[in-house]
Figure 1 (cartoon, rainbow, N blue to C red):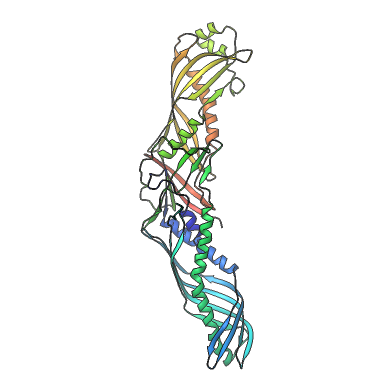
Figure 2: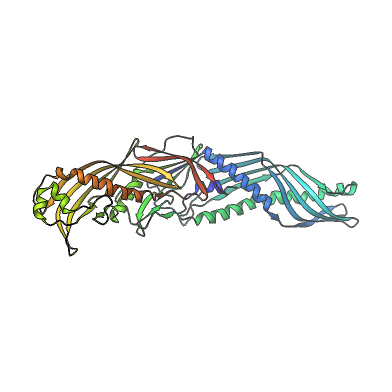
Length: 470
């Protein structure tokens, strides 16, 4: 019953630095819990109708003797759950109440006394069943979070048994001796069965991979940072939300700043990624050299770049290299790109350099000049196939001459052609990588529906409903 709800709750299972500011906040609203309840109840009904129950046998005292009974081939044919509610207990957990439930059961029966015995098939209708369960999400002594059933109570009201094809005083008299074991079994076993199901769910959730690969260069850590915070209207989960170099989980040079999610309840689920999450991404890819790119004649898609082209613009290049040679450009980031999230704005500031080489006939290279580059870019974000994908747009470029082997020249002469090369080669290459996307937290068969992204100062907010596929 609780699987969908707990899949939403326990997005991660390994605890990290407790009480550190998170890189990702997740909020599950009452709307999300209501959806979890509906899906969970449907799963409960389906599972109960598929389940085969063990035989019941024993005896009940009757006058001077005993009524021996055996109930076999017990099968639930219908489950009705007309009333159920799910609510949050601040600081404690989740309360589930199922009211006025009913079950229809088919079974074989056998009754024997010293003076009477009979067998047959019967239909049992159990009504006015009430179940109250409270779940909590503690951290165990190994630092893992878990789900546990802290309290459970089941009561049943009326049990009506129809002995198919049987009638008469004796049969009706002995029906009450069948009701007792059925009632006792229902009340005794309901909560242990729920507890057993929760235990299996807990083991299943512990196997979830919270360290998710992004690509060959990076992994993202979605482990839980602290205990879930349960309020009356929602549950908040603080996740690490850190991007690491693949296989290297050393600390980031950044410190996560505190932030809060606004009070909203229109969606089932909210995911808030802080600037810190994107800063650690920038640091990881910078250290891996992902911002470095080489553009050569054989890789340039739009035109062949050569010393002749540069020489037609800069006389110093023409004098230095009389014979036309292919040109190779090496671009690299010289600082960690700076991420800034503002209202409706995601900007990436990149400081880098571009070194221009002439490729000689023997395949050696000769440096012509090096430029400093300051690029202001903006990032548009979307969600596709449960991943956060981006598209980079170049807003502004600034060039300055850092070093020249051909003599001093006005860098403004090259701005147009260099801007064109960056727009035509570098930006599409970056967008091809960004289109592969960042994996969002794994919600165990839960997919996001109608997600909406909002950019505010300090974080990006995803508002979304969810769909569970059982």
